[in-house]
Length: 201
Image (cartoon, rainbow, N blue to C red; front, side, top):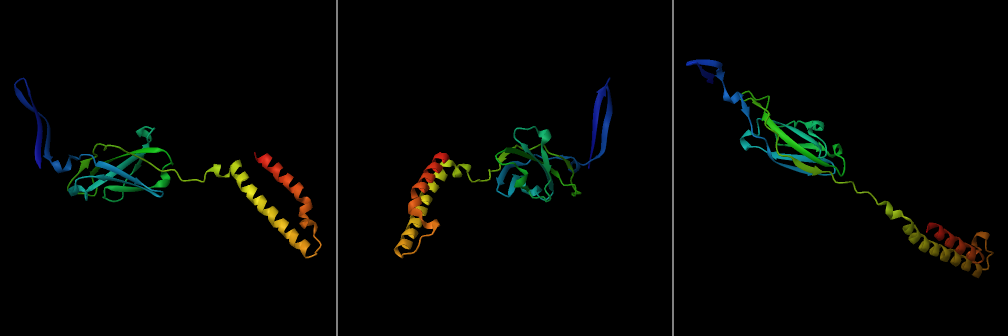
């Protein structure tokens, strides 16, 4: 350890104001903040990594803060990694789609370390990230024009099918049922199709 004292000269006399009889620098450390923050966000996870000197990785602990980019740091959420690895994973469901977030991290010597003690470092430089929007089927897929486009060929196929069945029934000398007397009902059915298309427009 070291003996640290603060001395001053007052009217020609030296005086000791503060004395640390056993000052150990290893117990009073302030580290540089982590650097090189990087994010990788998927549909299920958001992984944030950072860099610290390799010889310190096993004795450090970290605190991460993140918030929406448009809000103040007073509203930020805190996360503490459970290991000494310079990274953290957060569930993607904690982030809203299409919103930009900002994160920062700081470090200090782990509370479990006996040989060294430190205070928190300053906060690191920030990094921005955003959760991609979940693809959704466009509502325009089922708009009026699409319904019209599907309705016309389906109606035409239905007309041909019923007409063909009526023709086969007539050729075999069978009595056509009311449901198959389509040739006489064709003008009325065509009129219904035209009216329906007019409504869809």
